[in-house]
Image 1 (cartoon, rainbow, N blue to C red):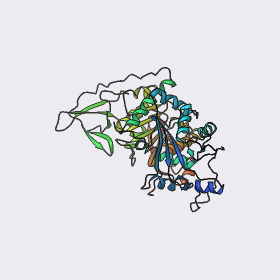
Image 2 (image 1 turned 45 degrees about the vertical axis):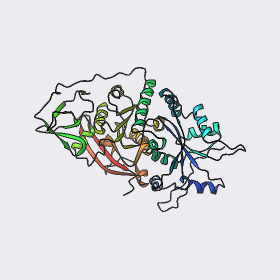
Image 3 (image 1 turned 120 degrees about the horizontal axis):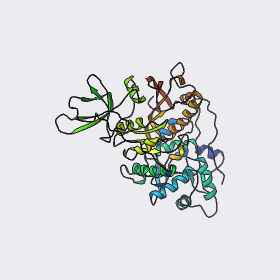
Image 4 (image 1 turned 90 degrees about the horizontal axis):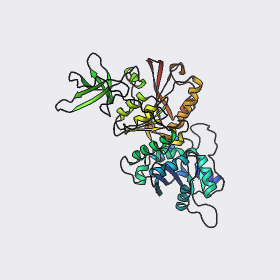
Length: 440
């Protein structure tokens, strides 16, 4: 069985007629077979029948979004194999990250999609990893596709997988957290947890009043200092020596603890002070954090999204790894962010991707293109991205130099604004944009 790669095509303009997988197969005089998507998650393997995917246009991204958002559910669970334990999940994840087909995965595919006795195949398996697909072909003889369309549809499927495989609220996130901790232990022999510093300014201050400030989850003290702060997810912990304030609620005796959010040490806090239109992060949000990981930013994001949100951190810093032990909404992944497919079992579809880069232009352009892959793999349609970089990595119009040009032409990415920041480490900028806004 030959591997069927993504078909090559030339884009002549937005008015060109879109080809579908079904049309391409018929042109080649092949048989159009139903496509089952192989989805790997922290709890097990799933095969999902994607009804009508072979008739979806492959050029305009609007065609994929219309398919995902149609009134009738296009996905149907064909088979699901839960992992027997966390250790079993780790074995499968390590294999998947290396594009290897384990005996367990091979048996799952062969049992769920049996081959006819006379040879050939009556099924097509859609995978997001072309190398994994080639090895599935050699081991099982199944027909496999790994087109851009498959990856796009899998991004949408990632938002619905909980319901399809019957997981309860928060069950997948807990499995991701447990699997990430096991995975991290295999990546480092010794995790050094940074000492937690508790500020002396952590006593009850009745004279201080804290009020909501512009964005949900962000607060500000009223008084001569007017300090930004977040509600401390882990009361009593001041991770970086920042000031803590315990404020008594009006009308009762309960107290709420806030952490001061210093705009001279945090790019996101500085952007708020400099008037950014929206940060798109609020309680309940899911955020993917990439690039130069900063422990202070991780802790602030954790406070912002609260107990109902999640922060997925790709990178390695000792104190961030240790932080995941006390902050249940932080999933740390010791991996390079350019290997975006390696951690697909640990990350759900996210609302916001936040990235920090401190690189010269040549390195920055390359790394930002890797970030584009993460956007296409994990960011939901209508989601937003924020990129912090050196100010000299911008051109005269305030756009990132030469990085998103081709993607702007496809109308997938829309740059909203650029905020210039003056921080302790020098001049920086924060580029804010949206991804696949269908209403525009």
